[in-house]
Image (cartoon, rainbow, N blue to C red; front, top):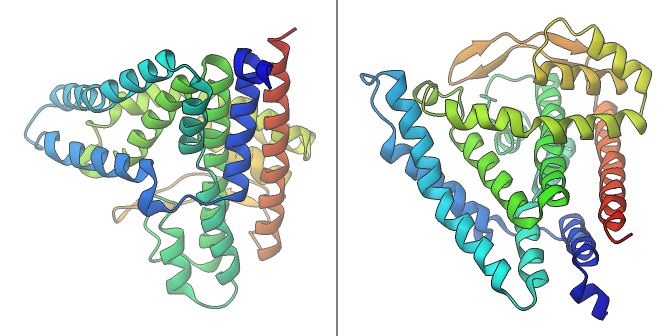
Length: 313
């Protein structure tokens, strides 16, 4: 027990597993979750300092950058000092990781979509889906709902779950917190919103680089627990070279489903390529996709634990 409280590597393993177990077994109510308050603050900050359309793009870039620094900087610094000065920092590290590793909500909402998607309750299904995607859901078919739900769960596994764990292993809980708050901000100031096109560009550009390492690690782990040859071939033959399309192509191929295609944001249609397989998504594919992600989750946690354990050797 003394080793757990004094050795930083053992502490990190303890923190990681407690956060993972809480995420797996308990759902923190949204009404009292700290990130709910952060979403509100980020949204209000964006609405307050967003320049008008008459201002040039450069002014939007400056405002977006300063807004993120002013809002997130003091919080991250204060929490970092609290952890650094605490006699038993492991307690605060556990609380931080429990807060930022909130992938359980995404799985819960996916499960709700899975429950109602085949019961002809289209309005309810779209309402549930709208809580986990940024796109317009009103005109989605059952296949479109299933596809959007799978894409959301897959990408958030890579960006949220793998991202938080990656930066925790790399640099500790404050780094994981910083990453998670930046990710939250980039999602709240969504670049597909017409008014946010330029305002959100600085933080979106930053996040495009920050998500790359964890997304690559998560994708490689997923290949190992599924069909690596199919996945690699799909990535190689993806018709476009952007990160999201390649990741969707990989996941679609290993689950033998078609992902991608047109998506509507704020009444404007964006035509993304269809990638993966030629097979349309079925109910059974949603179950298989969730199982693939769950398998990859535990492999990610196991590898991360081994990396932390190696620091003690």
